[in-house]
Amino acid sequence: MRLFLDLETSSKRKIETGTYAYASESRPLLIAWAISDGPAYVFDATKADIRNCPAVAAMYLADEIWAHHAAFDRLCLAFAGYSAPLRK
Image 1 (tube, helix red, strand yellow):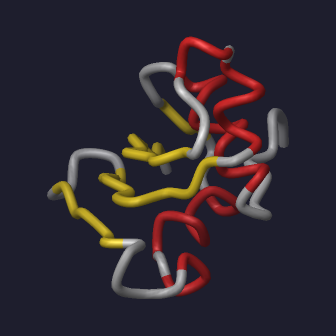
Image 2 (spheres, one colour):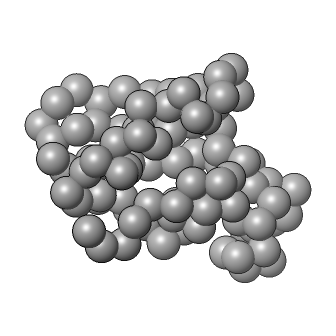
Image 3 (cartoon, one colour):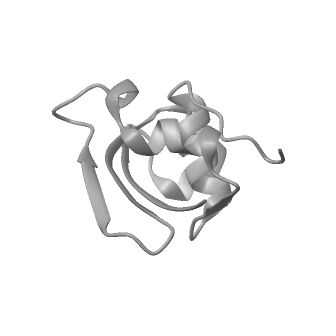
Protein backbone atom coordinates (compact mmCIF):
# COMPACT_ATOMS: atom_id res chain seq x y z
CA MET A 1 0.00 0.00 0.00
CA ARG A 2 1.28 3.48 -0.89
CA LEU A 3 0.25 6.47 1.21
CA PHE A 4 0.35 9.95 -0.33
CA LEU A 5 0.49 12.60 2.39
CA ASP A 6 0.51 16.40 2.67
CA LEU A 7 0.20 18.67 5.72
CA GLU A 8 -0.90 22.25 6.14
CA THR A 9 0.42 23.67 9.39
CA SER A 10 0.48 26.74 11.58
CA SER A 11 3.19 27.83 13.97
CA LYS A 12 3.99 30.60 16.41
CA ARG A 13 7.36 30.86 14.63
CA LYS A 14 7.91 32.11 11.09
CA ILE A 15 9.19 29.57 8.57
CA GLU A 16 12.18 31.87 8.01
CA THR A 17 13.45 30.94 11.50
CA GLY A 18 14.24 27.47 10.13
CA THR A 19 12.45 24.18 9.67
CA TYR A 20 13.19 22.79 13.12
CA ALA A 21 12.25 25.99 14.97
CA TYR A 22 9.02 26.33 12.96
CA ALA A 23 8.08 22.67 13.41
CA SER A 24 8.82 22.69 17.15
CA GLU A 25 5.89 25.05 17.69
CA SER A 26 3.69 23.94 14.82
CA ARG A 27 0.35 22.22 14.78
CA PRO A 28 -1.27 20.41 11.89
CA LEU A 29 -4.32 22.21 10.47
CA LEU A 30 -5.18 19.95 7.54
CA ILE A 31 -3.91 16.51 6.59
CA ALA A 32 -4.53 15.48 3.00
CA TRP A 33 -3.96 11.89 1.97
CA ALA A 34 -4.74 9.18 -0.53
CA ILE A 35 -4.06 5.48 -0.48
CA SER A 36 -2.55 4.04 -3.65
CA ASP A 37 -4.80 5.04 -6.58
CA GLY A 38 -7.80 5.78 -4.36
CA PRO A 39 -9.58 9.08 -3.80
CA ALA A 40 -7.97 11.96 -1.92
CA TYR A 41 -9.28 12.92 1.51
CA VAL A 42 -8.70 15.89 3.80
CA PHE A 43 -8.81 15.66 7.60
CA ASP A 44 -9.48 18.93 9.43
CA ALA A 45 -7.26 18.78 12.52
CA THR A 46 -8.76 22.03 13.83
CA LYS A 47 -12.10 20.26 14.35
CA ALA A 48 -11.05 16.78 15.44
CA ASP A 49 -8.23 15.11 17.34
CA ILE A 50 -5.35 14.07 15.09
CA ARG A 51 -5.46 10.63 16.74
CA ASN A 52 -8.70 10.06 14.80
CA CYS A 53 -7.10 10.78 11.41
CA PRO A 54 -6.99 7.67 9.21
CA ALA A 55 -3.81 8.94 7.53
CA VAL A 56 -1.94 8.76 10.85
CA ALA A 57 -2.91 5.10 11.26
CA ALA A 58 -2.05 4.45 7.61
CA MET A 59 1.52 5.70 8.19
CA TYR A 60 2.19 2.56 10.21
CA LEU A 61 0.53 0.23 7.68
CA ALA A 62 1.84 1.66 4.42
CA ASP A 63 4.67 0.02 2.51
CA GLU A 64 5.64 3.44 1.13
CA ILE A 65 4.87 7.01 2.17
CA TRP A 66 5.09 9.68 -0.52
CA ALA A 67 5.07 13.35 0.44
CA HIS A 68 6.36 16.58 -1.08
CA HIS A 69 8.67 18.15 1.49
CA ALA A 70 8.61 14.80 3.32
CA ALA A 71 11.24 15.78 5.87
CA PHE A 72 9.23 18.85 6.88
CA ASP A 73 5.94 16.93 7.17
CA ARG A 74 7.64 14.15 9.12
CA LEU A 75 9.19 16.66 11.54
CA CYS A 76 5.86 18.44 12.10
CA LEU A 77 4.13 15.11 12.77
CA ALA A 78 6.92 14.10 15.16
CA PHE A 79 6.43 17.27 17.20
CA ALA A 80 2.69 16.48 17.25
CA GLY A 81 3.56 13.09 18.73
CA TYR A 82 3.51 10.86 15.64
CA SER A 83 6.58 9.50 13.96
CA ALA A 84 6.35 7.94 10.53
CA PRO A 85 8.74 4.98 10.33
CA LEU A 86 11.65 5.54 7.94
CA ARG A 87 11.99 1.86 7.09
CA LYS A 88 10.04 -1.31 7.67
